[in-house]
Amino acid sequence: MFAELLSQPPFVIMLTGALVGVAAALVGCFLVLRGNSMLSDAISHTVIFGIVIVWLLTGQISGPVQVVGAALTGVFTVMLIEALTQTRRVRQDAAIGLVFPVLFAVGVLLLNLYARDVHVDEHTVLLGEIGFVWLETTPLGGVEVPTALLAMAAVTLVNALFVGLFYKELKIATFDPQLAQALGFAPALLFYALLLLTSTTAVAAFDAVGVVLFIAFVIVPPSAAYLLTDRLDRMLLYAMAIGMLSSPLGYAAAIALNVSIGGMMALMTGVCLLLALVAGPRHGMLVRWRRQRRQALENALRTLAVHLYQHEAGPQAAEESRTAALNDHLMWSPGRVEATLSEATQRGLVARQDGHLALTDRGRRLAREILEPWQGGR
Image 1 (cartoon, rainbow, N blue to C red):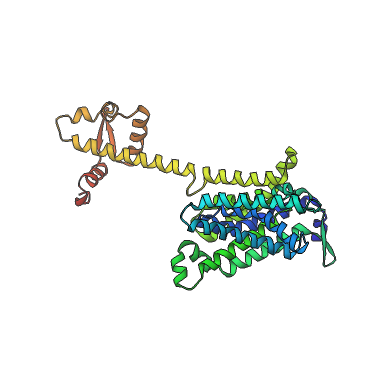
Image 2: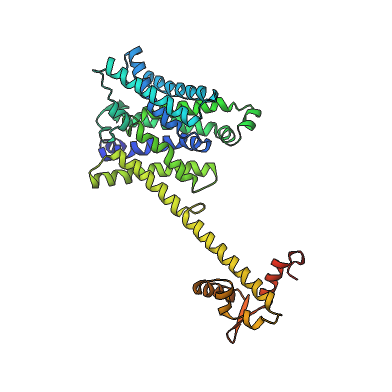
């Protein structure tokens, strides 16, 4: 049955996109948490430099040697960035902006000078074409498997094994590098291994979404997941789920609108990020708005209790206990007055008597807790 599914281009396209999402999310979560997410931008661009160099040295434009060579180029890029940063002449973001355009430009020039007849096109490398991944196949166990799908499956498996085997070490190295160093976890080695996997994933994603859209899969799903949870294990699961979900959604939207499939898949990751930003259960804008509104209501209830308590035994008690006094003296709008009085009445803090407001015992206790906290409301 699976062999029959592999003969269906839509299934192959969506499965390849989902694997790109999962593989990128596994390494992207740690890059985002470390604040190094833009390194994926630098790595993905300079990989083309590695592809050309490996071709000039070995004559191969695909295969394991090409993948390893391009991945090492990503690590070389990061080493150059760190070397520039350590001079303290430029900041890291500036160093990224200096290194990757140079290596990318050198790669394109070498491609134009020495590899005009080679089937390596910089436009394809940058943008990819996931719609054609089903055309090139490799026999595996008597079944013709799309080569790009096979490559992404292998990279996803390697990334999952790396994160699974070194989860504890990666977690400590990400949040507390000094503790990881003290425990002998070699955080620098883990970091470079993570970058090596990021480079390998970028190379494998060439035929699927291209290096530019690959950046979206590395950064956006983990960023969306970060808005949904504070736990690393859940962040990994949410990021992988967003990456997987973006594939069929992007494919369906691209077919409906007759636009780039890879571009629409990347756009779907942005839609997920927007939804997490607006409606996230912990840090979403709606939750924050409701929290601020609830806090404003609590402050209004405290202000009302203190206002009535301070005047209830004074000569102006009758004047200050009128509803209109809240408008005039506290500068509250009629809507705010009504909302506050409705909530205060429901909570049993005040009672309305002949057009005046009177504190209940509970309301009086609340006022004392604010004005005389050392008394404990007594």
